[in-house]
Length: 279
Image (cartoon, rainbow, N blue to C red):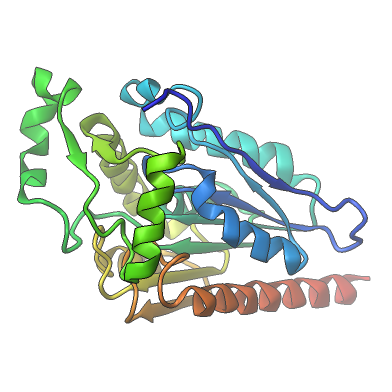
């Protein structure tokens, strides 16, 4: 496998008068490639879209062994800060690790218009997680942390068999992500998750959580903990019954995107109404 899996997703339409955007975050050991169809859908529905590779997930995949969860969050915050000033309404959305980072931004930015969290991963308790995850604290204190990785399960986080086979072929031919989870990376995710759980009350913006009942990586507990802990007046939970972790590519992908569209459109309408009242 080559060292480069960098991919950047940016859709701008400066001619649009209604300035609204969505900053997307990909999953653990993934890349913006997995957010491409989602980003295209959002752009076609009137949003500028931005998605970048997390530190350690880009130019040199060996760097994933050296980054921390702080690096991911600082990177996300820097992108948010640089982009936010250009838009009237600004949303963040993520999958897996990306969903946890999106919630983190909600805890630290009061001007966020809304959050869409897909397959939020605050706990590694899905049905495909190996029992060896319980040995993580021991492994991280030894030299094992530099040599052992948790392999990607055969289902690729997708229930639909046809899509699963397609993803397997694409993954084999193109450098669009890693096929395993390095211990250091898993440890970073769990530490980020702990920090997010401790500060959920700071989230006041609207939040939509979409999670599958049969998520192979993280159970619905993660989404439910988020919604129970945040201080938002507007919060919505949608549970899927025919998908695994990669909800943007599975059997209910159209429903997921339509639900996101409806949620965002409702928030934009409310924001426009407030601006009209102020004028």
